[in-house]
Image (cartoon, rainbow, N blue to C red; front, side, top):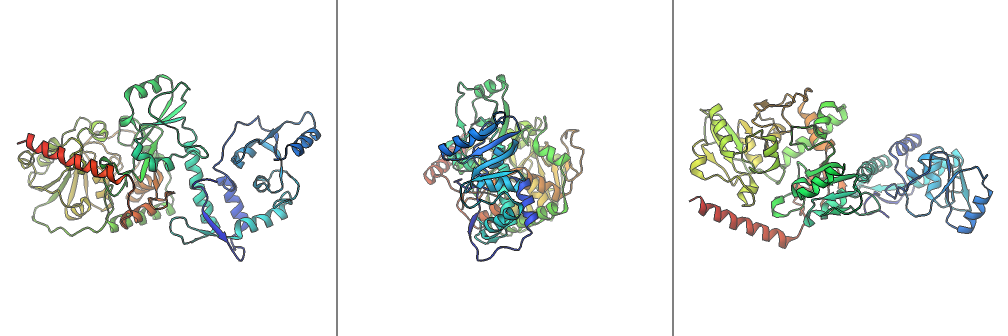
Length: 517
């Protein structure tokens, strides 16, 4: 049985009232039901008779009776994906208690059942519908995240989202650059079905057709060898709603992005998020969901690394207030998205040059403040361009306070857009170039679409990332993770490792302060 691929169910006293034909159509389109997360063995050319009979003697007798010219394929391992098995079948012969019989009948294939069992009469449409009513509609479904009741349609749609996740993960031969402390969550988000994710640290002899990599944590030689061998490279990075705490403190991420074209912070090449924004369709239901998600995030004070109540910050100047978030200066988002602008001090200088009369508030990046990464500024250099340095206020409370937010490529710019604040970009973050920001960097000419805020939120927070519920350990919609973070759900990871990393960061910070005089 899968670790997470089936919503919780419990027996019902009466069949549901959902439209049976619509439910069957949805299950067929999404290919869910039975062990849809199972193995997908290599199959013969289409047109075979699919045989799934456990008793070897009964199977031998059956095959002897098949015409010699009839091609067949025997299922010889348990827990295969039934939808994969029937994908090229012209007929199915299965044990009468095998769920494959019901799935095949539901898909419209001729079915012959061997022996007696739950699905003996699955071959007729009338019996098939009765079986589905009993085995699908005749159950109560419990939401695995909240424990609240679900309709069969909701259960199928949740299973469908898991199916898409599993199918996407089947293509990776290997995964590189995932630290052991991240595997607690990446194991679920990168699970390919029956097998465990193929985490690697070095290349092995077998050929790699496609590899998912956390590029900044993968040895350059491994990346070079993969590229030389012609492997498709898929990049993994933290998502935009990550955790209640810093990755630099070894707190595992609760969301990641998996990008097949590039990566969202590198404007030099296309990426999946850019494609979704440029070419995607945004029906009313998706826009409405995005708006509700955005309002929930703002209401709960959720940002990439934090959540909770936002203490009100009093305005201390009558001037136009501009917030400038610092960044990690050697981060790939800065090196690749900043287009040469990699210095926090230079960013402050440019903002001051553009707004000489404004009151500028500078907030250092939390990873830098924690002592883990590059980008620290001495106060005397900072105050040459900024009026104020704020370290102990949340980024969401500062965004609420100010009139504008000016960024290099910081995610704080996106968080400011969600809070309806004007944003000026000096580099090229993923949210630049869609008609929502004042852009001073060279936005790629590929970005021609104009998007509303809710379409941007839908792309960046619903369609692009993957999320893990820290409470149940299951892949989840973004709304669940936002609520968990707002409720203070523990982020997971080793408490001893997190404590040591924080201590290490404090020591580094003190040494840096001594070195800076």
